[in-house]
Amino acid sequence: MYASDINEHLRDEVNPKIVYTTRGFNADSKRYAKEAKFDGIEDFRVDNGKLYQELVECRVIKTERELKLLAHINRISSEAHIWVMQNIQPGMKEFQIESMFQHWGYFRGGCRHQSYTSICGCGPHGSVLHYGHAGAPNDGTIGESQLCLFDMGAEFRCYASDITCTIPSNGKFTSDQKLIYNAVLAAQQAVMAAIKPGVSYIEMHRLAYRVICEHLMDIGILHGGTIDDMMNANMGAVFMPHGLGHFMGLDTHDVGGRPKNHPKQTLPGFSSLRCCVELRAGMVLTVEPGVYFNDYSIDSALNDPAMSIYINSEILERFRGMGGVRIEDDVVVTRTGMVNLTQCPRTVEEIQDTMAGKAWNVKVIDNDLVFSSI
Image (cartoon, rainbow, N blue to C red; front, side, top):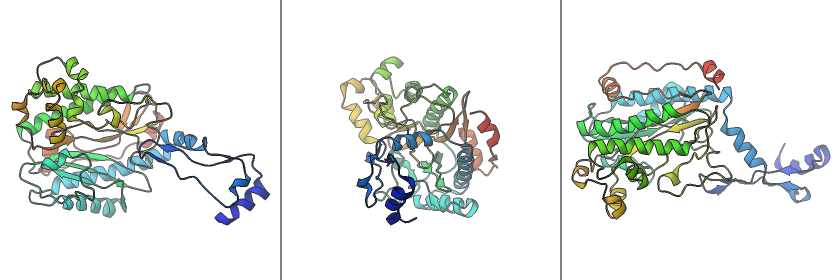
């Protein structure tokens, strides 16, 4: 049927009481969905308010076939990240890493497209959250002993993956790099252990901040107060100015995370959270805590008396220029917890062993087991 036939078809064969169209606000893009139009639509009673929300809800809980696709594309992207770990060398360009990842996904997995523009930030570039776009097109040179933040995900049959690995350019973390990496890993592990139906993802974001602040206090970057003082001052947002995660599926930032009447967040960091709901079995979302030494964010905090009293500037200087660490996995919420679809090396030891050439086994996830647990 052509668009020019819709009017006649509806009038002569369907005779609907109401024609539903999809005009709805996407809280992530801040745009309205484009509403269907056809010649003669004004002759029908049109409701453009209900269908969008119903379709959004349909995309929040994944079907068995969707989970199989998402598990498959996560396996391909995990393998591509591992291949990058085993082939990166100082002196390469960041765009070469992007190219390597894309090649593996297409050559080995049939993934013609990427879920988003790859972020390949090495050294200070890793502190820029969406580095890699046209304004900064992954054109830096990878230095010796730099932290490299690679946020890359292949797309398969319109379904996304979204994985971030942070690795040392020469295969060995420095002692300071280990401190920051382990702080982020501890935050991710704490959140994953707490995920289950009924849990608020806003509270998971808060938990990530708490674990990160505890580790920064142990390192000495934060001082002069208790962990509750740090949380009340929202010190976590200084070092992690983004949200903990978002829904994922047909879009990298899939719809449904900020539904109508969701609890709006105004605090820095919290306001960027793209999943502001209680979790339910069958949801797929990212868990992506991070710590970044971004000059703008840090300088703003140092100029704020309510925050600067908690920052040890002398120790902080040791970490300026390091860039950032983000660890991002894609998970499915189950009845009792969650299943991690991402299968990349995650501990310091696992990453260093993989970069040294040790084989890392990427398993095929038992999709029937995953779906039966939802």
